[in-house]
Image (tube, rainbow, N blue to C red; front, side, top):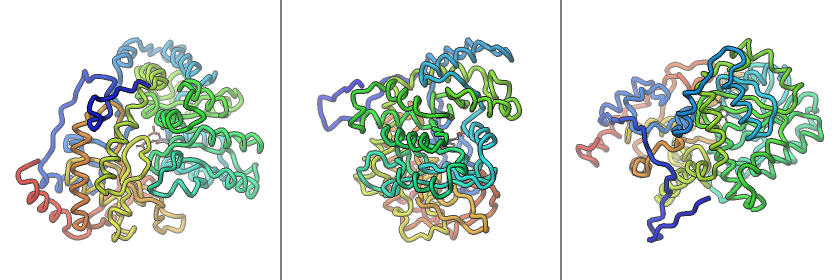
Length: 483
Ligand code: F0G
């Protein structure tokens, strides 16, 4: 990785190894308008209109900046229904990057999860994973299975210097398989990195250990590689045994040990779409029939062919250390600045975005008033910053209908790759600091409309009391006529 040192060491900041050539104009409504807009959006940042957002830090999904080479590749897309050259080109790249021979296309990550669940999960099955992801869990439970999380206890400690908080508890995995029996475990799912606990990575060693346990028990080992790009960077920079390996070798070593890999290329590969890949033809045959049923023909599976071309180029870029360091470096900068100010951040910085520990930020708020959801609303009011609640609102209710309080209440400030400049990151830090100093003004939220599945996407909430007006008035007092 190119290390470029600044002459004045105190000025060391992450340095972009790219330049911006296409831009999108932004605007920022006034603080009074922001209170209005967030209420029109049911106090759910998913429902805000982008025109009302200054920094869209909702997700890194489908919003990463594409390279000139990706855009160029899109022009050569071959949209023949069958026998498309685009599909052949993508398969060649998948073979080069992961070493896999077989590929099933799907329109995005959750579509791959649907296919996996259809093909492998039966009622009563248990799917162990380091940590669940919202859509993954929804697909498994929909088929009558259940998810067991086997993250080590270190993974849930909000602040530590543990480099691989996404790691599996290997003895717990072995014990679970023994208890439920390998026949009831259709697969073990590795999520690398781990979305809902702050983009935290797994070590390569841990992934290989999981694969070995699976092999010993005759269970499939499945890798959700959606967030693998940042995880590769963390393996390279944090895992002693891998520091002399190339990203390509790390990628190959991991993929050779997996039975199945799937990913959302809205994240991995700076594109849009999804893929299931494997070297095991039998497994592919088991899933194949679902592609034309749910997705599209086997050459595109619901993806737009131009996106497939962008994916192919983007996946090759994922092997470039100078490309993949950008996301984690910007995130680390934001996290360190906020941590130094005293804002409770998830430490160490992970991939995907900076994660604020809302449980600690709003210490006195009961989880039943949704601290992470409330903080996400406060950040929008304070700065037109759209983060994402990753706490109780993002959970599903328990089967008996009671609220399922999440283990962590996080607000995620995603840093889509190559999108924000450092001054925007600084602005974000500034507004978070202001909200932190005024945290005593923040109140809770209550449900107004609650969908029964994946409720966080389009559920609507209302503030408890008039705290939002008070927060806006304090903003005026402190910032005068500033937007
Ligand atoms: N797996 C992981 C680890 C993810 O983070 C996501 C999506 C998916 C699967 C599903 O992929 O969106 O293409 O259907 N994460 C997005 C996010 C939604 O904002 O974190 P998808």
